[in-house]
Image (cartoon, rainbow, N blue to C red; front, side, top):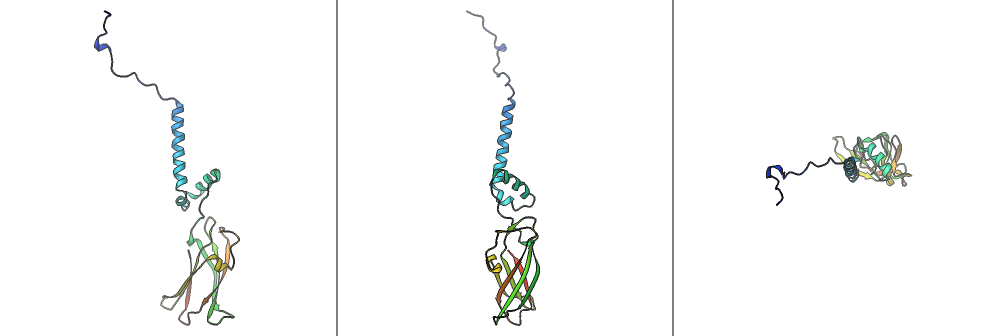
Length: 172
């Protein structure tokens, strides 16, 4: 009978594992980076509305050939000139002319323009929203209005009478 090894000389614990090769660490890092990139691209529509994220997303989408929604900052439109007067050829109507400028940092879609007429107490007598086709008179030459670009609008609206003393413009 062969000699038996004493029980205290055998071990049930496995030998220490060899360290992972650097390729495994590189693969894990690449997969983690791919996951982060995928999460960013999946949420790019929301992130594109953030001024801090937009330049980064434009760079990434330029490389990956993906698209971003147009910048939307209606508060960046500024009225530079406005005038309301009686319509020269249509009795009971007003002719409203205005110019506005996109003061946003990026190009954005043409806004919907809201014109409201108010009485002396600030109460709205009438309000109407105009699509770009309505206030420009024809489809815009580009779907976006560039930063710093100005546009003119001419609108014909019904005259609400002598009670209207003020008007406002808002963009949506």
